[in-house]
Length: 154
Image (cartoon, rainbow, N blue to C red):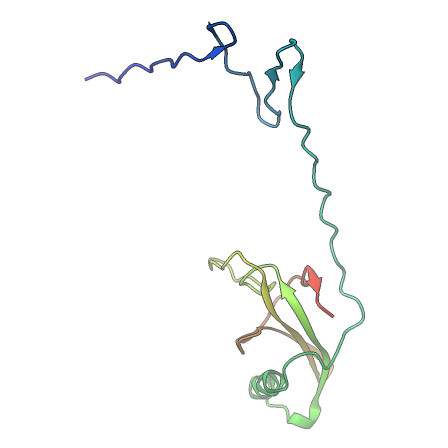
């Protein structure tokens, strides 16, 4: 059995003449003929290119206290340090671009929505530990370097 033939649906403009569909290419705005013969179309305003945000001076004191306490406990358990050796370098409220919290793991899928959260960086014995968390209490250590949030809230 063959494919059914495409049927042309005639359309008319004005006095019963068949109208040709406007020719377009990718990235072009379709145009149509106005009654006086001029072409009309909408101008599309291009959005500006995103500007990368460089992390500024670290902010402290914005992350939830219970979250920071849990993160410090995790770092102490990982390193064998004592809590008194931990310095909070950054404790900032941020908006992450997606569910990876700026630190995607290879082969993992993440929600593609903005995520309210926190960026907590600790220093223990001269080594920085970069933790990423959301506003629901989830956090993880970002090993191997991650991206800064696109728009810190502070």
